[in-house]
Image (cartoon, rainbow, N blue to C red):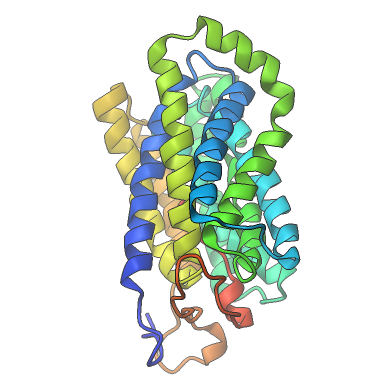
Length: 333
């Protein structure tokens, strides 16, 4: 990987925040799987978002955070609808059809989709590595889908839902990145969570009905999802994204599926089949190809994005160059 220019060295706080995000999001795949036995996908998403919004709102009041700048709102709204809203509903639905490890493997192609969206929407181009990575990941996704076909149509639907979740998550991150230039990580996360909760309000009746019948363990899992993988992890993610390159954030991606498979084996006693694991590894290989750095001497236009300086937590990040606008990161459950 091309070393960052002088004065743009990796930020230790951003690295710590990204690591916390990875661990919490990996644990969320397990909690979603557990809570999904008692809560419908939309109800679980709404309960999680309401819990997260309450915690984030309280933190905003304590810190006396005001409203983000007007320029931040388009990105907040889009990321709220796609990442906090659509993503959580379809991922919850997908995890009712496939195991947690398979879901994490499929959703992990999100960084590749982010790079594709950045090339299209932000006019960053479509380098050959990205196109090659897309082809490899497509083969991996096809292998995962075929491996699940023997489990019935419901499992294939689960894989497709996880693919849709990856698209929604990628779109949300690409929209969130510019918003972080005009608002703090806490502001962008809080109002994105609120918008996602509002979008999921049609599931309020299901949430009330499911909560009456759900065992305490499922409800506790839902609250855990709201407080830790949502309120805390989305804030640490936004904090890191505002201060770190997309390439460096993307490097954390590869730990998530392994952690999920290990946790699901220990906690849920479920592990994807060997063919599914092979397909998932091929998906990861495609992401690695798409994000691989240029060889020494290659023009800087294809180099990984440079890091932004690290402002104070409550301050809006400094403006970044066009190359800093690429979004990527670990699959967020």
